[in-house]
Amino acid sequence: MSRSRIASRVALSIAAASAIAITPMAVAAPSPESPKILSAAWGLNNANACPTGEKGLDNIPVTFNWFIKPTTIAVTDFVITRTDGTTVTPTCALQFPPDELNEIQTVNLIGDFGDPAGARPQTVTIVGKLEGRPPLAAKWQPITPGLSATIVQLEAGPDISDAWILTPAMLKGDKNACKVGGTFVRVAWSNGMTAVGGKEVGAAAVKSYLAVFTLPNGKVVKVRPLAVADLADHSTTAMDDNMHDLCLPKVPAGAVLTEIRIGANLLQDPNGDPNLAQRFKVQSPRVQAR
Image (cartoon, rainbow, N blue to C red):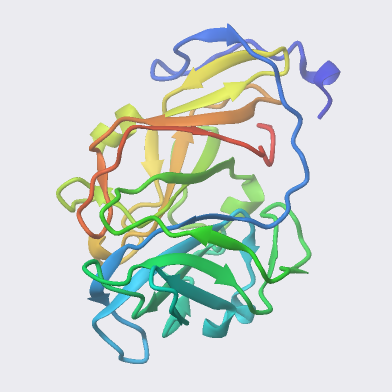
Protein backbone atom coordinates (compact mmCIF):
# COMPACT_ATOMS: atom_id res chain seq x y z
CA MET A 1 0.00 0.00 0.00
CA SER A 2 1.51 3.42 -0.97
CA ARG A 3 2.26 6.05 1.64
CA SER A 4 0.12 8.62 -0.21
CA ARG A 5 -2.85 6.31 0.03
CA ILE A 6 -2.53 5.70 3.73
CA ALA A 7 -1.01 8.93 5.05
CA SER A 8 -4.38 10.12 6.37
CA ARG A 9 -5.05 6.89 8.28
CA VAL A 10 -3.05 7.66 11.40
CA ALA A 11 -5.81 8.24 13.95
CA LEU A 12 -5.33 5.70 16.72
CA SER A 13 -8.12 3.97 18.55
CA ILE A 14 -6.12 1.58 20.72
CA ALA A 15 -6.98 0.00 24.07
CA ALA A 16 -5.58 1.45 27.28
CA ALA A 17 -2.52 -0.76 27.11
CA SER A 18 -1.43 0.45 23.71
CA ALA A 19 0.11 3.71 22.54
CA ILE A 20 2.61 5.23 24.95
CA ALA A 21 4.39 7.91 22.94
CA ILE A 22 4.67 9.30 19.43
CA THR A 23 7.91 10.82 18.10
CA PRO A 24 9.22 11.60 14.59
CA MET A 25 11.36 8.99 12.87
CA ALA A 26 12.33 8.24 9.28
CA VAL A 27 10.83 5.18 7.61
CA ALA A 28 13.17 2.69 5.93
CA ALA A 29 11.75 0.82 2.95
CA PRO A 30 11.82 -2.99 3.19
CA SER A 31 14.56 -4.65 1.14
CA PRO A 32 14.60 -8.08 -0.47
CA GLU A 33 15.79 -10.79 1.89
CA SER A 34 18.70 -13.10 1.28
CA PRO A 35 19.02 -16.18 3.52
CA LYS A 36 20.85 -15.66 6.82
CA ILE A 37 21.41 -17.46 10.09
CA LEU A 38 20.03 -15.07 12.69
CA SER A 39 21.12 -17.03 15.75
CA ALA A 40 22.61 -20.31 16.90
CA ALA A 41 22.58 -20.94 20.64
CA TRP A 42 23.85 -23.85 22.75
CA GLY A 43 20.72 -24.75 24.68
CA LEU A 44 21.41 -27.86 26.75
CA ASN A 45 24.49 -29.95 27.50
CA ASN A 46 24.08 -33.75 27.77
CA ALA A 47 20.34 -33.37 28.43
CA ASN A 48 18.62 -33.86 25.08
CA ALA A 49 17.58 -36.80 22.91
CA CYS A 50 16.77 -37.73 19.33
CA PRO A 51 13.58 -39.51 18.20
CA THR A 52 15.70 -42.50 17.22
CA GLY A 53 16.59 -43.09 20.87
CA GLU A 54 20.02 -41.50 21.38
CA LYS A 55 20.18 -39.71 24.75
CA GLY A 56 22.55 -37.52 26.73
CA LEU A 57 23.04 -35.11 23.83
CA ASP A 58 23.43 -31.35 23.42
CA ASN A 59 21.18 -29.10 21.35
CA ILE A 60 21.71 -25.95 19.30
CA PRO A 61 18.62 -24.23 17.83
CA VAL A 62 19.55 -22.47 14.58
CA THR A 63 17.14 -19.72 13.54
CA PHE A 64 17.05 -18.38 9.98
CA ASN A 65 15.36 -15.34 8.50
CA TRP A 66 13.83 -17.75 5.96
CA PHE A 67 11.47 -20.66 6.46
CA ILE A 68 13.34 -23.93 5.86
CA LYS A 69 11.70 -26.64 3.72
CA PRO A 70 11.27 -29.64 6.05
CA THR A 71 11.94 -32.33 3.44
CA THR A 72 15.37 -30.89 2.60
CA ILE A 73 16.75 -31.02 6.14
CA ALA A 74 19.47 -33.62 6.76
CA VAL A 75 22.10 -33.90 9.48
CA THR A 76 24.77 -33.64 6.78
CA ASP A 77 23.55 -30.11 5.98
CA PHE A 78 25.21 -28.79 9.15
CA VAL A 79 28.77 -28.81 10.47
CA ILE A 80 29.64 -27.72 13.99
CA THR A 81 33.22 -26.54 14.48
CA ARG A 82 34.57 -26.75 18.03
CA THR A 83 37.06 -24.44 19.73
CA ASP A 84 39.82 -27.03 19.26
CA GLY A 85 39.25 -27.13 15.49
CA THR A 86 37.47 -30.48 15.36
CA THR A 87 34.15 -30.77 13.55
CA VAL A 88 31.00 -32.80 14.06
CA THR A 89 27.61 -33.25 12.39
CA PRO A 90 24.38 -33.49 14.39
CA THR A 91 22.86 -36.81 15.38
CA CYS A 92 19.45 -35.44 14.38
CA ALA A 93 18.10 -32.15 13.02
CA LEU A 94 14.48 -31.36 13.82
CA GLN A 95 11.90 -28.64 13.32
CA PHE A 96 10.73 -29.31 16.86
CA PRO A 97 9.57 -27.95 19.26
CA PRO A 98 8.82 -25.08 16.83
CA ASP A 99 6.83 -27.34 14.52
CA GLU A 100 3.85 -25.31 13.29
CA LEU A 101 3.68 -24.25 9.64
CA ASN A 102 4.35 -20.61 10.53
CA GLU A 103 7.33 -21.51 12.79
CA ILE A 104 9.66 -23.37 10.46
CA GLN A 105 12.48 -20.83 10.52
CA THR A 106 14.25 -22.76 13.31
CA VAL A 107 16.08 -26.09 13.01
CA ASN A 108 17.00 -27.74 16.31
CA LEU A 109 20.35 -29.51 16.00
CA ILE A 110 20.90 -32.32 18.52
CA GLY A 111 24.18 -34.17 18.99
CA ASP A 112 27.45 -34.42 20.89
CA PHE A 113 28.76 -30.92 20.21
CA GLY A 114 31.25 -30.36 23.01
CA ASP A 115 31.75 -29.88 26.70
CA PRO A 116 31.70 -26.73 28.86
CA ALA A 117 35.00 -27.74 30.46
CA GLY A 118 36.68 -28.72 27.18
CA ALA A 119 36.21 -28.13 23.47
CA ARG A 120 33.05 -26.08 23.01
CA PRO A 121 30.89 -25.71 19.89
CA GLN A 122 32.05 -22.48 18.25
CA THR A 123 30.44 -22.10 14.82
CA VAL A 124 27.73 -23.73 12.71
CA THR A 125 28.05 -23.81 8.93
CA ILE A 126 25.56 -24.87 6.26
CA VAL A 127 27.22 -27.34 3.89
CA GLY A 128 24.27 -29.25 2.40
CA LYS A 129 21.42 -28.67 -0.04
CA LEU A 130 18.88 -26.90 2.13
CA GLU A 131 15.95 -25.11 0.54
CA GLY A 132 14.00 -22.24 2.01
CA ARG A 133 11.96 -19.16 1.26
CA PRO A 134 11.23 -15.79 2.82
CA PRO A 135 8.13 -16.19 5.03
CA LEU A 136 5.96 -14.17 2.64
CA ALA A 137 7.20 -15.91 -0.51
CA ALA A 138 5.52 -18.93 -2.10
CA LYS A 139 8.41 -20.63 -3.88
CA TRP A 140 11.18 -22.66 -2.24
CA GLN A 141 14.69 -21.72 -3.32
CA PRO A 142 18.12 -23.36 -2.86
CA ILE A 143 20.24 -21.97 -0.05
CA THR A 144 23.82 -21.68 -1.18
CA PRO A 145 26.13 -23.59 1.21
CA GLY A 146 28.48 -21.49 3.28
CA LEU A 147 26.15 -19.66 5.63
CA SER A 148 27.85 -19.61 9.01
CA ALA A 149 27.23 -18.20 12.49
CA THR A 150 29.01 -18.03 15.81
CA ILE A 151 27.31 -20.14 18.46
CA VAL A 152 26.12 -18.34 21.59
CA GLN A 153 27.45 -20.26 24.56
CA LEU A 154 25.57 -22.38 27.07
CA GLU A 155 25.63 -19.86 29.93
CA ALA A 156 23.93 -17.05 27.98
CA GLY A 157 20.23 -16.37 28.36
CA PRO A 158 17.81 -16.21 25.42
CA ASP A 159 17.92 -13.24 23.03
CA ILE A 160 15.42 -12.06 20.44
CA SER A 161 16.51 -13.25 16.99
CA ASP A 162 13.70 -12.01 14.76
CA ALA A 163 10.33 -10.22 14.78
CA TRP A 164 7.74 -9.71 12.05
CA ILE A 165 4.03 -9.13 11.46
CA LEU A 166 2.02 -12.29 10.91
CA THR A 167 -0.41 -12.15 7.99
CA PRO A 168 -3.99 -13.48 8.24
CA ALA A 169 -3.07 -16.31 5.84
CA MET A 170 -0.28 -17.49 8.15
CA LEU A 171 -2.66 -17.65 11.11
CA LYS A 172 -5.35 -19.65 9.30
CA GLY A 173 -5.84 -22.93 11.16
CA ASP A 174 -3.31 -22.05 13.89
CA LYS A 175 -4.79 -23.40 17.13
CA ASN A 176 -2.31 -21.38 19.20
CA ALA A 177 -3.00 -18.04 17.52
CA CYS A 178 -4.08 -14.92 19.37
CA LYS A 179 -7.69 -14.81 20.55
CA VAL A 180 -7.68 -11.03 21.04
CA GLY A 181 -6.28 -8.06 19.17
CA GLY A 182 -6.06 -6.94 15.56
CA THR A 183 -2.31 -6.93 14.78
CA PHE A 184 -0.17 -9.98 15.46
CA VAL A 185 3.61 -10.02 15.76
CA ARG A 186 5.83 -13.10 15.82
CA VAL A 187 8.85 -12.81 18.13
CA ALA A 188 11.45 -15.54 17.54
CA TRP A 189 14.04 -16.06 20.28
CA SER A 190 17.44 -17.74 20.11
CA ASN A 191 16.31 -20.59 22.36
CA GLY A 192 13.24 -22.16 23.85
CA MET A 193 11.99 -20.19 26.84
CA THR A 194 9.63 -20.28 29.78
CA ALA A 195 9.00 -17.77 32.53
CA VAL A 196 11.80 -17.63 35.08
CA GLY A 197 11.18 -20.61 37.35
CA GLY A 198 10.12 -22.90 34.50
CA LYS A 199 6.43 -22.07 34.28
CA GLU A 200 4.56 -20.80 31.23
CA VAL A 201 4.88 -17.07 30.66
CA GLY A 202 2.18 -14.93 32.19
CA ALA A 203 1.19 -11.38 33.06
CA ALA A 204 4.69 -10.14 33.85
CA ALA A 205 5.97 -10.85 30.33
CA VAL A 206 2.78 -9.53 28.71
CA LYS A 207 3.10 -6.30 30.66
CA SER A 208 6.78 -5.88 29.79
CA TYR A 209 6.68 -6.58 26.04
CA LEU A 210 6.55 -3.48 23.83
CA ALA A 211 6.21 -3.33 20.04
CA VAL A 212 7.40 -0.20 18.25
CA PHE A 213 5.94 0.76 14.87
CA THR A 214 6.76 3.55 12.41
CA LEU A 215 3.76 5.12 10.70
CA PRO A 216 3.68 6.25 7.06
CA ASN A 217 4.08 9.88 8.18
CA GLY A 218 7.29 9.05 10.04
CA LYS A 219 5.89 9.05 13.56
CA VAL A 220 6.59 6.22 16.02
CA VAL A 221 3.90 4.40 18.00
CA LYS A 222 4.74 2.16 20.96
CA VAL A 223 2.15 -0.54 21.62
CA ARG A 224 1.84 -3.02 24.48
CA PRO A 225 0.23 -6.43 23.82
CA LEU A 226 -3.16 -7.40 25.14
CA ALA A 227 -1.86 -10.97 25.48
CA VAL A 228 0.94 -13.31 24.41
CA ALA A 229 -0.05 -16.38 22.35
CA ASP A 230 1.63 -19.50 20.97
CA LEU A 231 1.86 -20.82 24.52
CA ALA A 232 1.29 -24.28 26.01
CA ASP A 233 1.55 -25.87 22.56
CA HIS A 234 3.38 -28.94 23.88
CA SER A 235 2.72 -31.32 26.75
CA THR A 236 5.21 -29.71 29.16
CA THR A 237 6.86 -26.33 29.51
CA ALA A 238 10.20 -28.15 29.22
CA MET A 239 9.39 -28.49 25.50
CA ASP A 240 8.39 -24.84 25.01
CA ASP A 241 9.63 -23.52 21.69
CA ASN A 242 11.36 -20.26 20.83
CA MET A 243 8.30 -18.43 19.49
CA HIS A 244 5.92 -15.91 21.06
CA ASP A 245 3.04 -14.20 19.28
CA LEU A 246 2.19 -10.71 20.54
CA CYS A 247 -1.55 -10.02 20.39
CA LEU A 248 -1.67 -6.28 19.78
CA PRO A 249 -4.50 -3.80 19.37
CA LYS A 250 -4.97 -2.99 15.70
CA VAL A 251 -2.40 -0.47 14.52
CA PRO A 252 -2.96 1.87 11.55
CA ALA A 253 -2.61 0.45 8.06
CA GLY A 254 0.89 0.89 6.69
CA ALA A 255 2.60 0.83 10.09
CA VAL A 256 6.02 -0.86 9.92
CA LEU A 257 7.38 -2.90 12.83
CA THR A 258 10.76 -1.46 13.85
CA GLU A 259 11.58 -2.69 17.38
CA ILE A 260 10.61 -5.17 20.11
CA ARG A 261 11.44 -4.54 23.76
CA ILE A 262 11.11 -6.59 26.94
CA GLY A 263 12.64 -6.28 30.39
CA ALA A 264 15.27 -8.53 31.97
CA ASN A 265 14.79 -11.66 34.09
CA LEU A 266 11.33 -12.50 32.76
CA LEU A 267 12.24 -15.52 30.61
CA GLN A 268 14.72 -18.37 30.92
CA ASP A 269 16.15 -20.89 28.47
CA PRO A 270 16.14 -24.68 29.05
CA ASN A 271 19.45 -24.36 30.90
CA GLY A 272 17.82 -21.98 33.40
CA ASP A 273 19.64 -18.85 32.19
CA PRO A 274 17.51 -15.66 32.37
CA ASN A 275 17.17 -13.12 29.58
CA LEU A 276 18.84 -9.75 29.54
CA ALA A 277 16.72 -6.69 28.69
CA GLN A 278 15.97 -6.71 24.97
CA ARG A 279 15.72 -3.78 22.52
CA PHE A 280 15.64 -5.71 19.27
CA LYS A 281 15.84 -3.57 16.13
CA VAL A 282 13.99 -5.05 13.15
CA GLN A 283 16.47 -4.83 10.27
CA SER A 284 14.28 -6.01 7.37
CA PRO A 285 10.56 -5.44 7.94
CA ARG A 286 8.66 -8.02 5.93
CA VAL A 287 5.15 -6.62 5.86
CA GLN A 288 3.20 -3.52 6.79
CA ALA A 289 0.15 -3.60 9.02
CA ARG A 290 -3.08 -3.92 7.09
